[in-house]
Structures are given as structure tokens and as C-alpha cells.
Length: 349
Image (cartoon, rainbow, N blue to C red; front, side, top):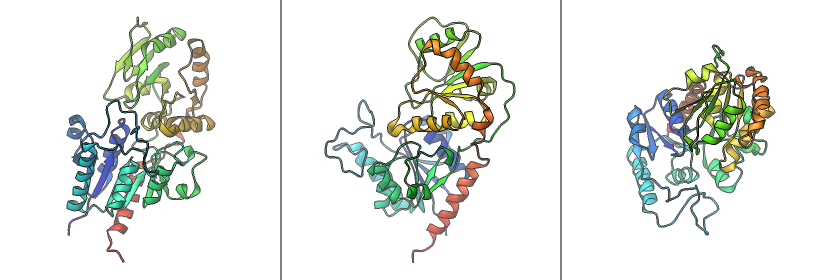
């Protein structure tokens, strides 16, 4: 008798969902099919089966469907979009053909509830932020278990007790705590794939405000201007580790990937959360600051604020943020999923 597979829905906004899916799929013993809207670069780099879905994003996508009569249980259900029908048909066909033991959903209320309609148990990834609206709570209620890819210490205060009790706090996935070494006094600025990138004029002003330190910038930067000699724009890089190791201070958003890398590297952190639905990054940044693990500002600082901010950042104790990293987080989560899958694979009744 063949082992029933796991279906893993991967959201297409930002790189973190894809990276998390592959880390976890690599650690699971069961076969995993990654389901989502991918590009060739993604699927070519994965060793797992991939079910590519048509893109459901409307022109000028902003996460809203523009519907006045949306049911309370959903976030995004635009009408008269053939690509959405095709997506759901392909997911239903996968379920009918492969009989997955469960679906991991990272993240989509609609896919979580659709899987429930298909009579497939779900594990729903629950991101940080204030997610107490009706659609989120109904998706959480429909799931067998919830996965939080962050430490319990970063949980939002308003999260209902029943949601907390249903949650497995996986912690930062895929990174082990390291000892800082070889710092050269530089400042590292990181922009993730899911945001709009940095403004060159703002970076130039910051570099001029703190001229005695080198500024290294990873990720997209927009705009034009004369770049000072202490500002280095590297664009996308395949491995941020060398830049992270040398940095004495990291400036970045509150996305899972950036926060996890900073925590594992035991780096001092100035967190500038990017605008996200449900205050995902802002809520996380506030918790980090409350724990003494980071300094947080809700907007990019003015030039005159940078010298003091850098001093405050360098005064942070890196042990505070690295204490949030739990060793072998991926293996712990994989074991939890394997145990649940074993229970679900047993005949009903």
C-alpha cells in the first residue's frame, strides 16, 4: 500500500512561502506536491512535484477583489474570473487522483475552506499580526491544527485563547543560532521580494548622515541619484550570509525571512516594518521591541535621526534576539506533521 501524499499550497506573494514550503517538504518522509502559481525558476529548483495553477491576481492586484457582496467567510473571491475556476478544478482533480492525507495551506482562507469542502484535513499556516476577522477565524476553525512560523514570544496580544491552543509554534524555520564573528562595523539594509524595495534618495540621505560606516543594501532599490562612496547597492544576491556575518547593525522589515536570519545571526536589528494586511510586520516588530530584541520605527527615519538610531542599535544586546531561535525547528515541525498524518491516515471510525 503506497504512502498517501501531502498537498502543500504555497501563496505567491513574496519569497518566504516558497522557501518555507521547500524546507518543510525536504524534511517530510511522505511525498509532497507543492501547489501554487510558480515561475520556472522556482519549480526548476525544487526536487518535489509541483502543481502549477493559473494566476488569480486581477490587473493592478492589491489583495482586494472589489466585490461589494462578498460572503463574510472569504477575503478574495472575485466573480467572473475563469482563472479561479481553473485553479479550483486543478486542486480538486489533484485531490481526487492522489487522495492526500492532508493539505498544508500557506496561506489562503479560500484554499483552506475549499480543502475542507473536498473532505481533506488541513494544517493552516498562521502568520503574525491581528488575524481575528471572520475569514481568518473560520479558516482556523476548519483546520486540524495551526502552524505559526514564529516563536510563541512574538504572539499578538489579541489572539483568542482557542486559536493559541490549536497552534503549533514552530519558531523561525531552517536556521540555527550562530555566534557573531568578523563584524566590520557595516550597516546592512535588506529589502525582501514581497515589498516595493527601497528609495535611493532615502538611502543616500542615510549614508550621508552616518558617513563613517559602510552601508550595504540587498534587494531592489528604485530611483536615481549620486551614490556616495560608503553606500553599496548589491541588488538581489543568492546568499545573504556573508553580508550578514560582517554587519554590526541590520536594517530591515518585519518579514519572517529577515527576522529569522537576523535572529539566527545574533545581529542587532533596527526593524522598519513594511505595510502588510492585518499588521503582520508591525505587530511582530512591536513585540521584538518590547522584548528588547530590536529597535522599531514605523516609517523610514529622517536623515537627522540616523546617527542616534545607529548608536541605539549598536547598544542592543544580540543575545536577546538570538534567544528566540529554537534549534532543529524544521525537524520539530516535520515530526509534528508526520504524527498528525499518521493519525489521519487511519480508517475513519
